[in-house]
Amino acid sequence: MEFVAIVIGSKSDYAVMKECVSVLEKFDVPYEIIISSAHRSPERTKKYVLEAEHRGAQLFVAAAGMAAHLAGAISAITTKPVIGVPMNGGVLDGLDALLSTVQMPSGMPVGTMAIGKSGAINSAYIAMQILALKDKELAEKLKEDRIMKSKNVELDSIEIEKILLQ
Image 1 (cartoon, rainbow, N blue to C red):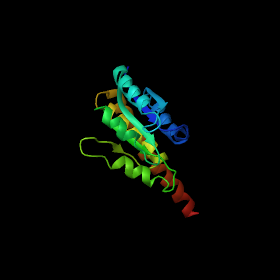
Image 2 (cartoon, rainbow, N blue to C red):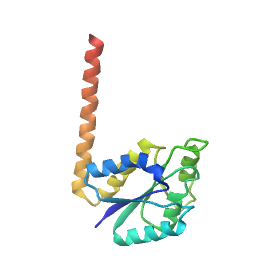
Image 3 (cartoon, rainbow, N blue to C red):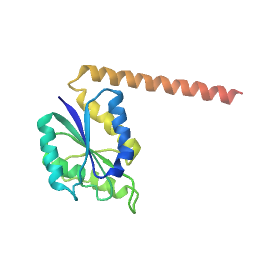
Image 4 (cartoon, helix red, strand yellow):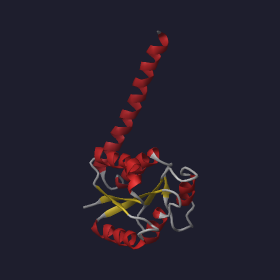
């Protein structure tokens, strides 16, 4: 079975990454999520990535804060796409995590999202866009989602216009 593998660096990251999980569930995209750290459990991380690939992981989403080497460590193990989500926190409130995630050496790419909740949500969407290259049903669901988002903007505008005309 093909799935999205989500690796978070610590339990506290789940508070944000549940947003990614919610989006994947909304679209019925299979996933699994584990806690593993590039620093505190490097062997666990390596073992999980290799096993997940063998079981059908099509890509990896990695969320971590501070030094945020998790996505880079995963990219070093696999040639599957890796999406990094920097987490808020630490002295620099996520800027350190963003820079650690985005500044990868050439040949070791990590697609880096925004810090925090919007990054978690967008990591699910970009993961699904990658999967939709081979999954026409998912591609159609994503198109329908975009149409609904567009309609919601129009409905929101009508609502505000009514308020302003009062």
